[in-house]
Length: 454
Ligand code: PHE
Image (cartoon, rainbow, N blue to C red; front, side, top):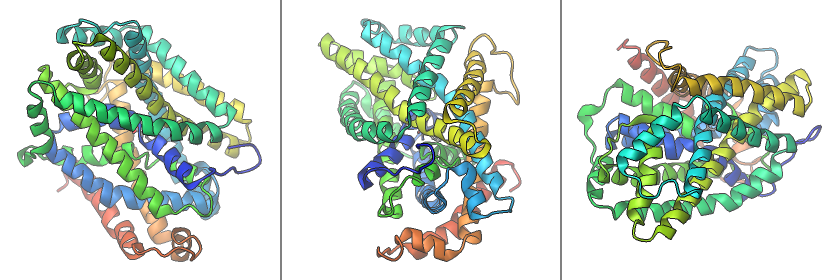
């Protein structure tokens, strides 16, 4: 966003890819596989898909409606659309969630930089699976290295935000997303060709419903919100840059399909590889940082040059996928401080970056030297992940449903979805039904179920 004027993305494809750039990130490639692993595999994925369709899609369209109609970043959008009401708190809540997510997300984003360096300096060559486990443990628990990478990553994000994101985000997304996609497909092929890969495939495709409990529903819902960048106004802020010809339903559907595809493909890379080298699928946040270097070594072990090129490319792309997401997270808080308190964009960005460094440092240390400090049995990193993804995002999603489904005039939604009547849209009735009834009731039930009230 430029000062004083609201810029638009240059094309419809650009709008889709920028939104997909926010959605596709560590959530798909790092978080989705380990949540799937923790929750027993295929049954989790089915419930996840249901969450994407029934909650994710309508809420994404609703956020798009809020953003494009208000032409304001999320921190101000609800003030514009519901002046003088308490709805403004929904915007603030989203900003807070985004700020907290950026803090711990950047820790993992920083890890990708360490792994790029490892890959570039051939650090993966000839390592045994045990050595990969140990290498990750000692790196993530090191008191200094992850912090350095965290700061580097946040500074890179900061730099792009201060420059203004329009050209950067849109253009880079157009180049990077297709490359990421091709690379992922190649890796799926490699992973599936490893010995014992079929055990991983079975884990992913054969649902075991005996493992389904309330945690699985909460996990799947949280993952859907996190992965689709919903519930904190990221996509609503981006939608404020959509042109008037952008079709909101079509864009949401495209982003949903791309995001889900990348997540499922990431699962198809990680699990066959994990089973092949005998790593438990529920290894948690370390999963991809241990299994992937292994895949490269094993799949291309005979051709070291290929193993080298793929390792480097993969971690570069992982870092870039993370970067398009951190930019979108950063933009929400920066635009909020800029618009709400009249600070310059530079000053706002500095405040956000400094705050996130502070949160990131504590998150990172909570995995190492501060491991013994826990709250509700969780370290700071895990606590932030839990509170944001599983509580803050769905809660705000619930309120977005109520805001757009019940508070906002229907004519506003119709006008936004049909681009002022120019576009025929066949799913208006279904959308409103999902938004007004299905999504809010489902979110409420999952919460109530988790709290043990039913
Ligand atoms: N969707 C991003 C990912 O999958 C993370 C994110 C969450 C980005 C919320 C913006 C808002 O990595």
